[in-house]
Amino acid sequence: MKRIWHHLFAGLGLLSLMLAACARASTATPAGGGPQTVEVTREVPVTVEVPVQATVVVQVPAVVVPTGGRLDTIKARGSLICGVNGGLPGFSFLESDGSFSGFDADFCRAVAAAVFGDPSAVEFRALSAQERFTALQTGEVDVLIRNTTWTYLRDVELGTTFGPTTFYDGQGMLVHADLGVTTLEDLEGGTICVQTGTTTELNLTDQMAARGISYDPVVFEDIDATYAAYEENRCDAVTSDRSQLVGRRSAMADASAHVLLDVVMSKEPLGPLTLQGDSQWSDVVAWTVYGVLAAEEKGINSGNVDSFASTTDPEIKRMLGLDDSGLGAKLGLENDWLVNVITAVGNYGEIYDRSLGPDTPLDIDRGPNQLWTQGGLLYSPPFR
Image (cartoon, rainbow, N blue to C red; front, top):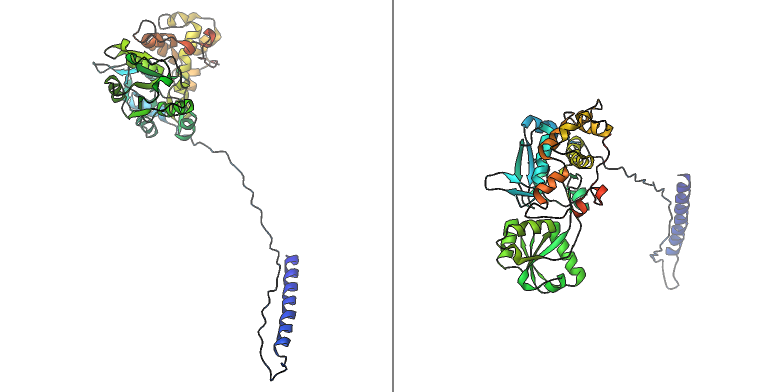
């Protein structure tokens, strides 16, 4: 501050001297007559130093405040509300008798069995691609198990938590056999049916642009309308997850009239979602998935689970609640919760084979959906 006032006074002093000089100049008498006033204007630079206060920005990690209580809400209600597709054979399909069948539907039943010991204690809510995230965010459903792809933006922007991947998939293309199309390039200038509000729509745009292929997208909000338009030859092709294409083809009038191209356009890890901020409920869903994976790895299935009551395997004891570790209680469940799950729906292999395996119309090879011990990607963390 002393330095600032010093410069300020020095500047004012200089200004005073200049003004005095100007005053003397203005009263000088010119050669031709009496006194005359002359205005003299001069810019006088004055430098004043002002202290600058530095601002330090400290970045604080975002804190997610747990909402909690979802498990208690579900228990008090007496049933689980599970969001599904409802129109996808093999995954979740509304049958004529009002029941839901499929791989995803069985995982809903598995979660209900974990919570209530009863796989039938679940209400299925069929949701469109546009409705699904809003239904979860508003609490209309407790969990979303609806062939939904885990992506960066969905994970960080939607306020949701993805559970373990239950099915590794990839986007494909189904075409009318009589067109003779064998590659994506053969669809140059063609029409492609696609469902809006999905990663499928975005992947299609990226892939065709990268390959320099021009096409006309025919976009629908509803899954049934998408495939109806394709079957009516309003599109040359239809694109979605390969598993979905296989499932929908199996329900077409003549499955042999449609060819699944030998191309995989993306990575599509599919699995359950819960609302972010409730770690207890997210853990219940996640460890239900891990439980059926670990059961298959350990050779435990719906037909032999009771025979493991005398096992000497420490991990199996912890899994099935046969020791005093109390793993179930740590989730807010009964200690034999996984016994209830396996008894109700089986291990992962049983769930897969029942809806997608070789004895079904879909007959989808497990491929990456094998256990890690069989060269696949499925893996459960240790139960300890």
